[in-house]
Picture 1 (cartoon, rainbow, N blue to C red):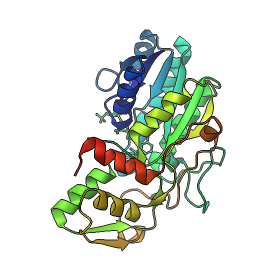
Picture 2 (cartoon, rainbow, N blue to C red):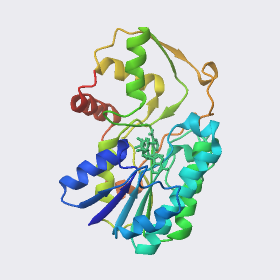
Picture 3 (cartoon, rainbow, N blue to C red):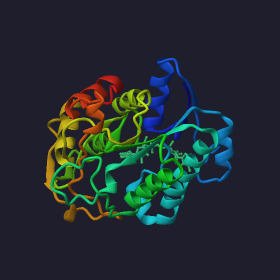
Picture 4 (cartoon, rainbow, N blue to C red):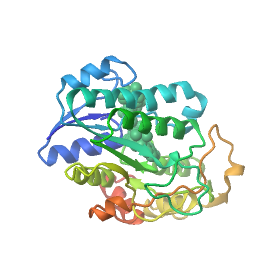
Length: 282
Ligand SMILES: NC(=O)c1ccc[n+]([C@@H]2O[C@H](COP(=O)([O-])OP(=O)(O)OC[C@H]3O[C@@H](n4cnc5c(N)ncnc54)[C@H](OP(=O)(O)O)[C@@H]3O)[C@@H](O)[C@H]2O)c1
C-alpha cells in the first residue's frame, strides 16, 4: 500500500514509519515545515503524492498550550484535519484520523466505549473532536477514527520523560491521583493501526494499552522500572496542581470494536517495560 503519514516526526509518526516500512509498505513521511496541515496548499500537496491511505498523526498535542491559544489549536487540530480529509477525498484515499480520550468529559465513572457521546471540556479536546467531525463530513466512509491516550515513545516529550527528569532534578515528586487514563506505548498503537488498515472496517476505534491507572500509579511504575524506586512521590489532587487546561478526571478508553476484529493491545505495565527495554531510558 502507498501510505502518507502526517506528523511523521512525532512519537506515533516515527513508530508508524518504522513499522510500516519494515512491513514492506511504501511510506511517505510528511511534517512541518514542508507539509504544514494548516496551509490550504496541503490539500494539493498531499493528493499529489497519490497515497492510497493517509495516516493523520500531526496535531498540536500540548494540552496546556491549546488552552492558552485555542485559535491555534483549532487551526491545527480541526481545520488541519479537514484539509487532510479533503486531500483524501481528492485522491480517493482512506484516512486514519488519530484522536484522543479528551473528547470525553471524564464524568461517566467508567471507561469510555467507541459509541459513547463526546463532550470535550478543554480546547485540546474540542479542537480534536471538531477534527473528527470535519473529517467525517468529507469522508462518510473510508474513514477510521482512532482515539488513544497518554502516548509515549523513546525520545518523545512525554510523561515518562518528564517524571524521570523531575525525579533527577528534585529527588522527590508530587503527582495527581485523580486523573485516570490509559498509558499507551506508541509502537503498540502503530502495530494496532497497521492491523486495522488492512480490514477496511471503517469507523471509530479506541486503541490504548489495556487497563487504566492514575498519573500517580503511572509515575510510581516509571520510577520503579527506571531504577528510581527510592524517590518519594507525594500524592496530590488536580485541585493542588493549577494548570492552564482543565482535564477530564476519569477518561480511560476501552477497546471493544478493535477487539471484535482481533486487534488488542497488551496491558499497560507490560508495554511500559518494553519501553524501558527499547529505549534504555533510565
Ligand atoms: N501525546 C499524547 O499523549 C496523545 C494522547 C492522545 C491522543 N494523541 C493523538 O495522537 C496523535 C499523535 O500524537 P503524538 O504524541 O505522536 O504527537 P507529537 O509527538 O506531538 O507529534 C505531532 C507531530 O505533528 C507535527 N505538527 C504540529 N503541527 C503541525 C502542522 N501544522 N502541520 C504538520 N505537522 C504538524 C509536530 O511537529 P512539531 O513537533 O514541530 O510541532 C510533530 O512532529 C495526535 O493526533 C494526538 O492528538 C496524543
